[in-house]
Length: 500
Image (cartoon, rainbow, N blue to C red):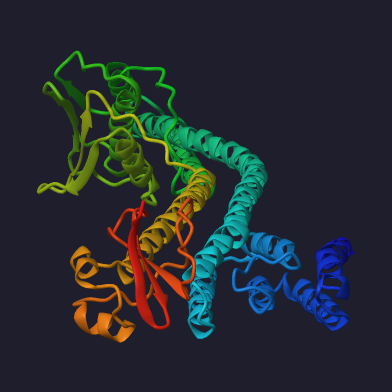
């Protein structure tokens, strides 16, 4: 409804100049008024869907009234539809083709009607000021509105994304906690199983105590398997490792494993301390290696070796062949460990040894690189919208400047060409004599100009009496004065003079 009211008001406003300037009192007719009102109504009706059609129709209605394009009846319509074309048209190429077509059509009409090129220059000036300039203003307003609209859309989207990120981070933190529970409790349960296995075969205990120790060992193994299945559901493939350091050092970890019955050696001591993610990853590599050895190769000897250089630390956990494990893992521990080492900037490797054991190796940097946050999609889209607006502003500046420069060069070229047509060589002026006919003068002169000037220069002395006509020619190519005056009477040259 609002759009219809706007179109109606626009149509009534544009019809006012037609009613005032095209009626019979101003040299027009009521037929012209009716045609103008109908044309403007049609232009307003199609201006939303085809804005360039409305602009072209207005130009077509203006040119027959005046080759200078700027007419009292349709000047306001040219400005309005030029602005609406820039405001509503998506692409600019069609508009540029229309402006070029109007200029070419004006030149063709000037040639067909044998009028002065000054009217065509006036048409180009009116086209630039009454059509192109409002069109550029409309383009700027369109780009600015697009930037504002994009900003509000991005703000709304960022609010939704922020809420989604908060929910995702809560779930991810729960997954991290679950992963740490699996790693720490799985390690402790594996050590409990080793202690129970040692008690199960101890000769100092009776059959009942050995049977209870066996049940304890199997219960620990079953608890480890259930813990792995439950926590495995909560793990995320892209979950990041927690940033909090463990509560014990590598020396304390190996000592606790040794006290639980695991034959583990650590060399050298003390183990170098690494900051941040690298220190956490070092602890986790040793913990995972001891846990796998206790679970899959109980009774086997385990060696932990930590070597260092100025830039990195290399940790290696090697376990020998065991007598039979307490269960088979699903491989999720190594997958999570590989992600944790990668986040710390290191590399992880694991393989079976030649004697049937297992080797776990990690290389960790002393100074892990800081993660670079990725630019959010909303920021990239906002930057792209800003670039589009800057391009629109640049076009709004260079297009008028280019048009004005082209118009100036064209006017200068036409002015030189016009001056050359009315230039009389000083030698030819000296050669002609009073009493010669125009035909004789044309034959004697080497390069007689095509046409004289339109009239005498301002401030020229009065023409001699009794002359039929006087013609004025340029005496120099660039200067407007002095000029040569040739006066004729009865078809013969009656007088010549240089008019200052």
